[in-house]
Image (cartoon, rainbow, N blue to C red):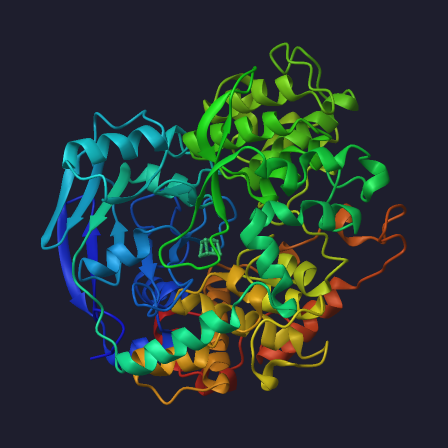
Length: 617
Ligand code: SF4
């Protein structure tokens, strides 16, 4: 058996109601680990290409990492995996909170769903009890209410939950999945997959501890890491910022350096948004009433905020992340911080991804400004830039699928097709997914990931590569201090390797997370950096093979002109990056051909040849 995990997973067929547990062989853990790695291994084998993402044959998995639930700090993440209904590509999104460790403590490493339930249900995993329960009364409730009702029904406020809100129920392709309070698996529209299965929630609580190979060594490595993480050390300045403010602490830095897109990706830089300081992290933190953290995380970047009075009054809401502030602030020229706190609360309660939703509103504002739509289409809402009440009014229509909001609820690509009149020129997306708010020209590895990763438009999938290009070390290993060219292999591979173990990418900010030592202590494996990269290479190659099998080719993925051409104003003026050439370099370094298809030699080297041959290429 593999130490650090339970060596078994659950399969739930929602059509028939059958629940089966299956053992996972040691070899699969060693090669794919957990999280996104175990997720793609299982879905690639058990799914056929071409399934309807919202149909019964799509699978939806909630998968923990091997380090999750152990004493290793910042490893509470679990990954949701499925075929994305937003992009038709491989889909994954990960979330922190307590759900991952609690799922692991029930004795299972993951749970996978297929089929469609005849009525709304939730899955209860309570130590040895595993059952599907009626969720008719929960259907229509928001994510906060759902959690509260489950706590009451189960008589236990320590049960951890993962659930959808009304946006997921109405199959908004931007719907997210919400964990406990303040955590979301936001991207790829996976909340709609959960809604299509009529699966309202999963409630978990377990009391089993995870067996590790060498507890004494783990204690020593942990002590060493916590001493190294000391946020008063100058090398940990980014971690200190994160601890003080959360990701919103990066807002002014990103905005003034031109990383943050402004006015629907039309502008950049402080001059384009002179009142930007009003939405900075320091300002948001004034509203913080409680600091919170994911399970076992010493960084503790999260918080709850309260706006006491006024039109945006809200109590104990999640503190907005950088992405939310950029989306509903800079992208919409909105400097009203209290409105952004309220907007974040609406998105979280209804269960919609704040990145995609922010772009959808900014897109509608630009269409309004250019006369492509008018008040007749917007149900009377004056969608002018910076108009916070109008943003909220349209967002509420979007999450409830009402009027013009129903168009926006499935993302800008589909909305532009329906609006017509040249609206597609202002629809910022890559193969249907709205990109995160980091201009790829500032850090080309990130822009290349938007175009080349199996989940398009994502800022987290090559995190280590972008951080390396920013000049900030992401790991304490000399083998990873690579040239700007090699970043196109090391960046995605190390990132996917870490994600498979359950590590939070924010831990990269401290730059000294001893992954190799932790893995050795937990699993007993003779583990090194080379193996971490090989695991990431394997996971990344199978994610790509999933897309290849769906018939997707490089020409299906394009960066919008506003993200690809040299900017004519702002801090990045004139910066020219040839993202398609960089994508070619990435393919080459990964051992894939010019069409992004892994060569037989690469598949053989990664031990994927038989799987891909059997299950289709
Ligand atoms: S850094 Fe923040 S998001 Fe990451 S595990 Fe810690 S508290 Fe959670």
